[in-house]
Amino acid sequence: MKTLVAGMQAMVAGNGRTLEWAVTFTRSDAQVFRFTSAAKDATISANLYASQPGFSVSSITSTLGYVVDTLEMTVLTNDDMTIADFLAGRWDGCEVTFDQYDWTTVANGFIPWPKYRVAEIQPIQGGFVLELRDMRQLMLQDYTRNSAKTCPYRLGDTRCAKVLTSFTHSFTVTGVTSRSIFTCSGLAQATDYFSNGQVTFVDGLYAGLPLLVRAHTTGGVLTLAVPLVEDIVVAQTGTIIAGCLKRFEEDCRVKYNNALNFGGQKDLPSTETLVGQ
Image (cartoon, rainbow, N blue to C red; front, top):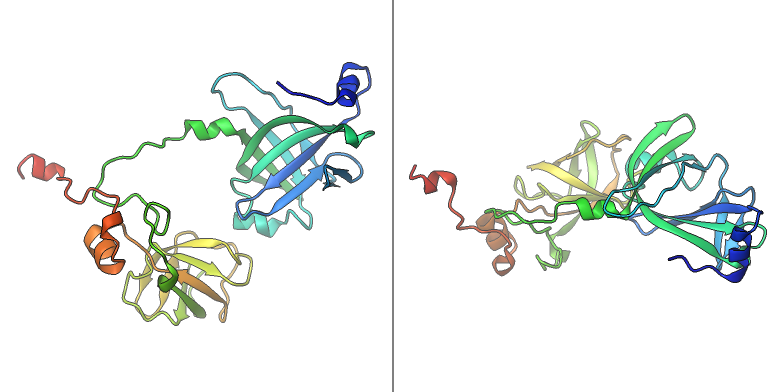
């Protein structure tokens, strides 16, 4: 049940309709952006909501049950919502909070609406169309765990518990083959040491964004899992965390000395073993 202040209740109950949208975007990198559909900026609860030209929202519905509500939002690119950031994936999975307010009396506060997440992004001329899905989408995801010989944990997470400081290395790009393959100095480790690891560039479009390493070969040659949307440049710098291929012996015990936290079932028999082959 929504609880509104008296002034907002009177406005909603009356014939006047001076409501505007206040939208808060919270990205996965903890950056927060606030916009309003009104023609001028608004400061509400000490937060500034900037007027966003071209900002539009399709009809918002809120249904009972486990059906996921969706809506579309059209935004034009600006200094905060840049094409580069959209293409780099900084807005993927962004949390979006909708509220309505009376632009004539902002002190009346908000009418709250459900939260959403950015599910799909479609480029258009001068901007993007965002497909948003409400938080019930998370309830439809499969969180079950299958038995397997390999470890399901992410290297360094709370279940793995491995401190990665000594496995984090600095590098400088010395050669570029493509937008996904490049050679670095400072990485003299053996083949596959950084496979399934994580690269973070210091500068450029992807500065600060973790990127998955698909393969690593001797000589410091790295192959990213997904090609970038901008060229990798010689002399770019960054850090890389060693990879884990989720194996008990080679990775968890020998490489990381972390056998007690291995999450797989290393002695799980294969189908061939069970049928006697």
